[in-house]
Image (cartoon, rainbow, N blue to C red; front, side, top):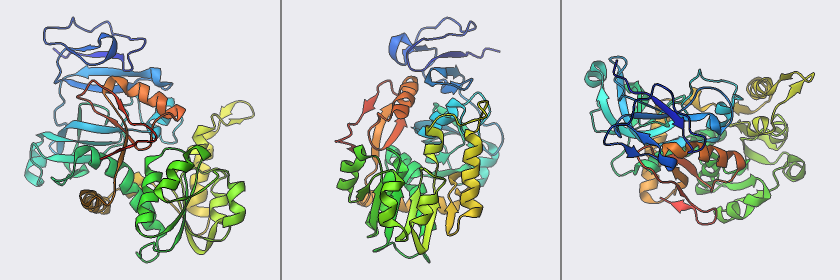
Length: 398
């Protein structure tokens, strides 16, 4: 009773309003293009897809500020969250582990503790007002997120919130992937590291940056349009097509990090020397190539993705499949704090690709799918109304 709900297209195009929306009251604020209005600027506002499809399926939903759903829960007031290719794939209905609908995109977010359940307040060191970061299966592109207190990590006071978001979403998984490839926890000094990089993926950039920091000889297989940028980073660039680079690298690599899966990780495995390790971090090409039809009827994309995953886990030798969700633990928190320290020293410099409010998330989805975003992490800022894009040649350094 008394709940105010609304849903509008969140890119300012083809706006749709539910019949039950009450007439806006005084104090209405403009939340984006074409006169989008909310009834209360402090209310919950979240991007939501109620069915699978293109970016036009994303809407904004307004409701009251959430409360802790259990004594262990805390409510986080979100400062910023990620907008990723994975969000786009899930929204389109192609991911191998689809969440239930309605789907709220955004997996990493930074925010302030707004309210705490009784158990969360008594059993944790967290307090209202603390800056924290968290990873969720979905739900980050909103003004508030509710989750159990043990799922959040405090941000060091010297670390900027946007930098913390970049570190959590890109550098922590990059560090963990490199750790899986290294021997006996030793540095990658003089090791030959091949990064198979399919586009402007922020994790791949972080892998290259961190490997170069350790003194590795880094090779980057990527589309030619990215070679200039990667060369400036210090990587040796190769064509993305494995048929073009495998003859020169076969049997020579100490570590291969493959997020593309162009041929079921076969070429990446063949590039390893006898003591090398292949770390499979994704399979962007499986979903980017569109539907895989069997007998002209069923779309077998998810089956192909599952096969590639099983192949990496159980069939290929000297191979590890990296699943960020499965590996997120206390070690991830330690990696995050260490990377915050490196950022404070200026040793690493996270890149922000775009910064967009909630009602422009759909537009960023379209740009990601076209490959039009600059290098770095795409950030949703739920309390702002303006979009900012860095340029491909002058990426923003935090």
